[in-house]
Length: 115
Image (tube, rainbow, N blue to C red; front, side, top):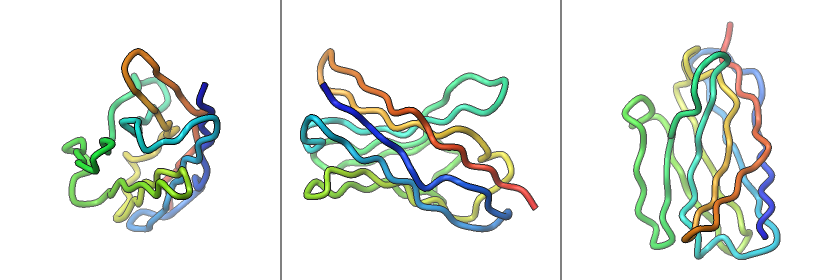
């Protein structure tokens, strides 16, 4: 069983930056594909970024060039660096770990981009 805890959300002005963290307990994250998703109010949850166990990454088109996903296996943590934030990035951001049939979610952290 893996427990995921996100942190780092908050209120930021347009153009600002935030770094989200997802800390895992119960298992090493190094063997999992790690993803960030987000869900805006009244909308479906959507994919944001992925980092595979080998380190390959991919991003949703809406965040390419602005967001960077990374992992620190020694700290069992995955990060999402978010730059040049826009109001449309406002959402609850969720961390997700997948390996085979095992699929775990964190509780989410709120990101609000507003002036």
